[in-house]
Length: 402
Ligand code: C5P
Image (cartoon, rainbow, N blue to C red; front, side):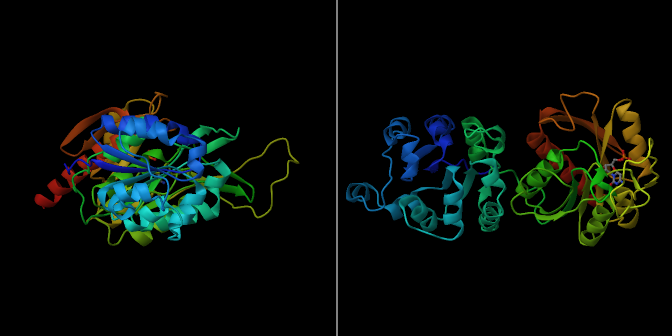
């Protein structure tokens, strides 16, 4: 495991979630870090510098041109002191400033002057989060190496409901202080499918399923953290794109099939985590279907099996499938492993509503030709790490025995 980080510069900008930052400082200190807080002028409307000073045990800086603060620890010195910068909450305005390299206050200047690892915890109104400008600015920052911590969904201070809440202080402290995972997948190219597909019935209607994409996105994040180069082929989901992945967005199973085949040639590992619709309407009707008849009959045709096609056509790619079952999990999963000629299959019991499809947690039983392993119930992010570690072990074993 990597060296424990211990010098966190906490940048607080002016959003309502700033009132949680004294608690965040306490949670960070409990994780063996030293914290120095820097506030923007608008953050002071939501949290007092004195409160942050009291909990951090360090002076709080808020002014680029304060002679007393500069005499104690100049801003360049402070930028060099930090090994981690956490901006929490990060407003849309501050994210825009950072993306464009502005340095018109202490915090933005520090960010420019520091080589520390940067974490950004955006928190804002759900519409501002979704705004194209915000997402483009975040993409710029992610490309530069910053880690964007996706905001939680739920009720917002303004009364809206949606994505834009700062995660709880404990979760942020856990993310910031998480030791870097070992680079089990360094240099490996991995293609992952995630989310549902949508099969058009007519220009305004489609059939789909309840897949949230959480597991596939968690796998992409885990693989990236372990050093892999990831291409994520994603159906329509409501999750922020992982940092540092190539993301190809698709709607239908046919589009997903094409996107996978375009990206699979140089891949080492393929993980089919998407809930691909088994069938699509035979005819894609060009006009909206009218409700003139009492009954409506649609004819469906089978979609290509993306995973089976990769396993068949790309024998050198290590293939991993998922089996969501409601009964006889082990038997169906082993059957799929053999029938689709996979290297590995991860099975979960979707009849249990506490795990699987739309929940935060999952548990898996993983099968391969010579063995199996149970991965206990865990948060999907943790489970993704456990599964990727197992994938890397089996991948190496396959290559060692070839
Ligand atoms: O056969 P079944 O749909 O249960 O298999 C599930 C596995 O196959 C998953 O890994 C899923 O991503 C993949 N799959 C696929 N293309 C399909 C159907 C399933 O890649 N058309």
